[in-house]
Image: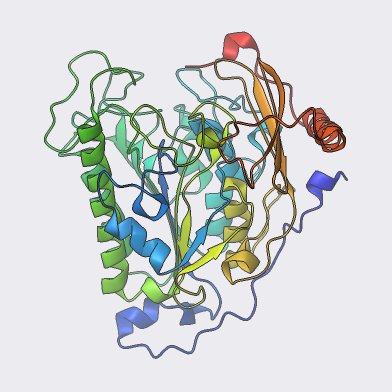
Length: 447
């Protein structure tokens, strides 16, 4: 077994019993006292959110008080990455806990109209959590296959309210790729009503408010602030729907305010239901931003392995366990969320995980050393490895070595000055690629 596979993928949760006094029967039914161990899990994943697009990472053009509340009342993961710089591969990593380049589903690149998707066997995250006793709900974006055999319900989601493709008009709810109404409630196409961010929020709140005795796993996959560039009150796009069409910084600000309001409603629903104390809330993004986004101190953007394409703003709140107002420098990625959720549920995976359990980092432990890898052929082939503060990048322009501790913008190439580290990282990257599937061929580079 390779070093990349030496993961404990059957980690068990222990010692998390609560002594909280329960004020009502409803709260009692929903509390950690159901089995003494497992929290509710609410994952809020944004789409194309730049690292600097929220208040706790430096946004100034607008305010995000509700998103910032998660950071203020929990832990900020300052070295958090998406598993890919584009949509579908990151979602593969979330569903499997593995590098997307391992999976023979053809989703190393963002999926469009191709008749492929992520198969529900071996069991993916929602099925594993469902089998462990969780009620599972997906609200928002799927982007892992539009054919019936790849549907979220096949993967173990008890509920699905969202769209299957890459993006949708926020007003008409029309799929940007198919130019048709493909928004679904369960497996039934539904008519649009209102601004989509608001509709996703309303459904997420309904999921939280529903009375049940099971722990809850809610995956709230907002499409904001992905294009089309539309804020509340804007009209639907009549024809073209491209990232380069329309929009303005003011439009983007409106999209972000709506997103923040939605997060606030979700947090309020957790408070009102008595679930907040025993709920792990994760706020993150599927990759970096584009066009109107701010990447903070980082260079490059979505679709690149530069820090601006893969570094994501991430905060985690769990009032009964995680200390408020803390920060962790643990280098982590999307696949680690999968490993952590499975550990919290007290279950494992049918396949070796690349992700690690982040509970030690969330609870104040020292960061553990590791290597992370990325590869994308979107527009051009790029790949990278990070070990410690060093990051080795290979792209069409050549090879580059950066020390992120004092050069987060990746402006100073150290390949000539640090030959020994360069060779070691090159060897690691080559070994990782040898374990992965071959890169997607040029003709499979989806838009």
